[in-house]
Length: 99
Length: 99
Image (cartoon, chains in turn orange, green):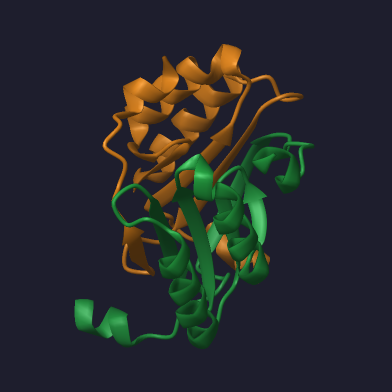
């Protein structure tokens, strides 16, 4: 089962990070290159297997593996989830959050 | 298509929030009652349709809809996603983050 999941094509991703503030700006910009900023340290968007490899390579070059944490949730496509929103999205832009 | 998605059963959820600090402790505790704390303002875990209704009711009683934002991503089950982790998870517990 796990092997089957690994061989599937994932074309949508959520990404959350928790990185040291020294590197947060670099990580933010890198994630924004590949995904849309969704909320604080959460990004989301369409993702191809080749884009994902590039994103992970670039992240691995920037983060400190002892101190930082990045989680990428890969989904087959945006039909496998539904979202419920309560309240209203933040008016802050992503850029405000990293200054 | 959208109608079909709405009628499906979702049994796993990710939840992200961005709430005013006055209410963050209440929202954190409420989310922890139903889901596992994953990272900063991110929770995840198994979810039944009835639990989800209760969680949303309780959240709606606590949040200020003008200022706060909660997003629940509902998935059919935990087989529809795969996660890639880079770096190491935070050693901080959820409780540290809300004090």
